[in-house]
Length: 71
Image 1: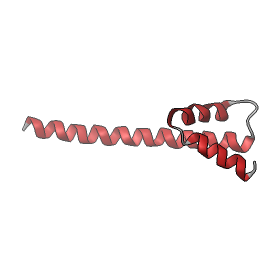
Image 2: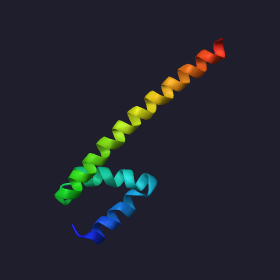
Image 3: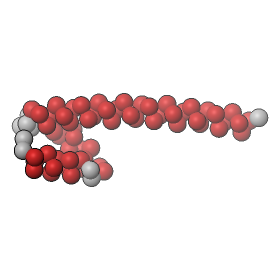
Image 4: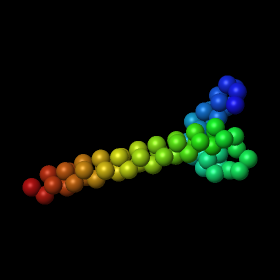
């Protein structure tokens, strides 16, 4: 892939919902460049890890707030 193709790819992924949909298209599409497909899969894995971490933090602080409210 050329530099301009990567710039366009990163620009598309910066659009909130469109970027996420395009990551799935690029990761699991059959005509996608192999480098872009691997990059999209890796980014989706990172997004999944971050979502799990965010949920754990929200549950931790939610439990703490609930505990403080009951005392």
